[in-house]
Image (cartoon, rainbow over all chains, first blue to last red; front, side, top):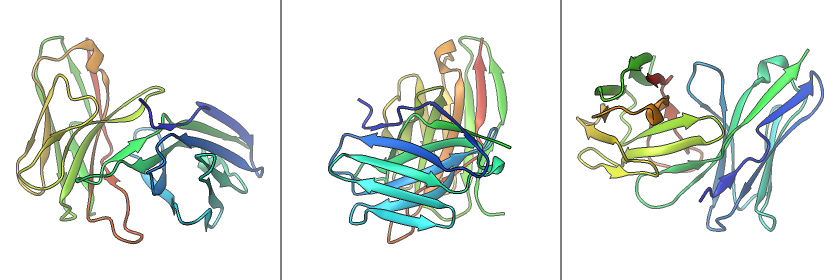
Length: 113
Length: 115
């Protein structure tokens, strides 16, 4: 049972425009969410996070929005740059000992010049 | 540079062969993890080690074993490789999750092909 889902496997955006990546979750006990970015042949790297007590967190061009009633979060990238082309994963802590994260299936973003 | 180091980066195995994927971290993290990445499936947890001396199964442990050799090292072993284990394997580590210090540091991955 995938508790974190990214329903769009890919997204193509023109440089300078907004990229919106979406993530849905089923477990209402999740209290923290993270986004990771992954380039080919590299490991994922942390991008931005949000606590469930907030509905928005911003870091430069990246903003994450959380809608708890809809169990939905989104990552906005404005303006999009070709270097943003990567696979983006959303993730949430599963709880319990060991700090385990459960990940969505990922969305491949392609930003065209 | 501090981080998580995985070896090897690439490996081709024949069905039935065995191998061990190595992982080491130098950030003094207590917890370490092995994930596999498959197209459309995201990252799925194979095994984890919450602290030195402990290991536990994740979502997809069948066909794998692990060893937490010491605080730095966490290895993943395939005893009898199968084509279904063709994947990219990532090791990760994390410290205590407090305040803004959430999340993992990942290694660069091992691309394994089983033929």
